[in-house]
Length: 238
Image 1: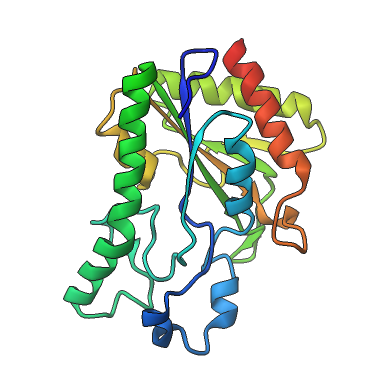
Image 2 (image 1 turned 45 degrees about the horizontal axis):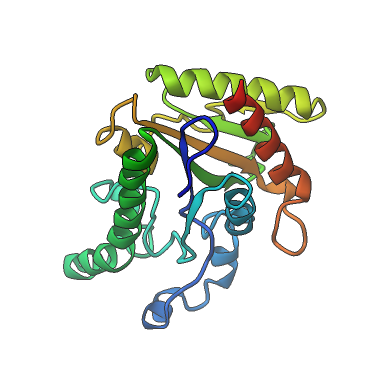
């Protein structure tokens, strides 16, 4: 993970990058192909978007493709929602094995990357890349892009505010929001890492993209990555 011109290391992760089901767990998802393809199975477009952001930002990129219906890599291990309705009913020892095989390694790799970034640069910007369904429970979700953060941490508040303003200026026809459609302080990887790293060392921002922009090839159009990269660079430089 290289240091940016602002003395800040950048880390990009994608916790819900795919809907893959390891062969040994295939029996749990028989007849559930449609569910796996839905927003409940993965965050469409995020695997490619994380890669597209990583190179230009000089960031280390850590991506996962196991379906969140097996174990949710963006939930704390103690959160009941780390398991879906499919895996929640498994015996406890099997759930513990799922955490040990998929959840723990991803979190350890990411935590190690943050620690190394802090050692190298003194401060890390962790971008968690996610996407959301355009309609949930009959409610249309208007944002095109959103930034999630903890408003009680001054560095995150300042960065998210300035970055969202830059995005709005660069994309005047798009709806840019902060902490919408989700709260940035809700349980997840960035929230958990805030308890381990001080505000002076760690900035955790989740980038959310509306899945209505996903193209037939499963990726987002170029303007998504280009606008995020350009405006983040300008924000950090400013």
